[in-house]
Image 1: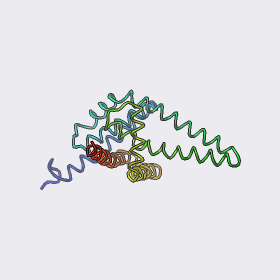
Image 2 (image 1 turned 30 degrees about the vertical axis):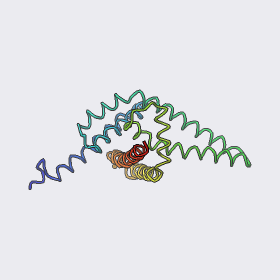
Image 3 (image 1 turned 180 degrees about the horizontal axis):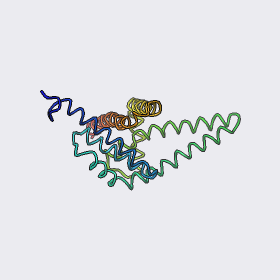
Image 4 (image 1 turned 90 degrees about the vertical axis):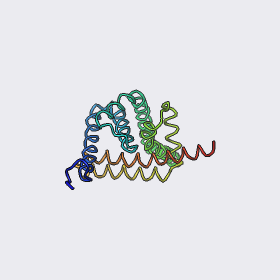
Length: 204
């Protein structure tokens, strides 16, 4: 068989590899205006969701469809999330300048909240593209799922840390590593969603 024929495994691999690069580069470009980081990330998760569900209608078309559909919600959630992140960072810094038992209590408290903030952040985008929820329910459900599916949360965290490590120490990988990371992250998250949905249906 000709490896360059449209039906060959090599061609299909090359096509998928190219799509990952295109999606990654498109995400990077759309993140250049800082205010579009959250909508662009939501769009990337939306495209990956289509891939996982075997509904591939093209990278560019899907990306901009999801970007447009989720722009307002992801922008609002992004603002809320940035405010929460800044608040945690500020309060931890203030607590570090305290002394005695109060310092230990305050730092421990805000570090505790920071852990839950990070856990919730991992599920935020997958939940946003998988379910159609108000932003308050989006945050609530992301938090609850991150706790109930703790092993998935840990695995997703490891994937993101590895992606960040590769981007920093092997910069050339930045053209593809984030789309691959998001793919595996969403793959894990969707399995969690199905598990939760099956349990909910069984209890109904």
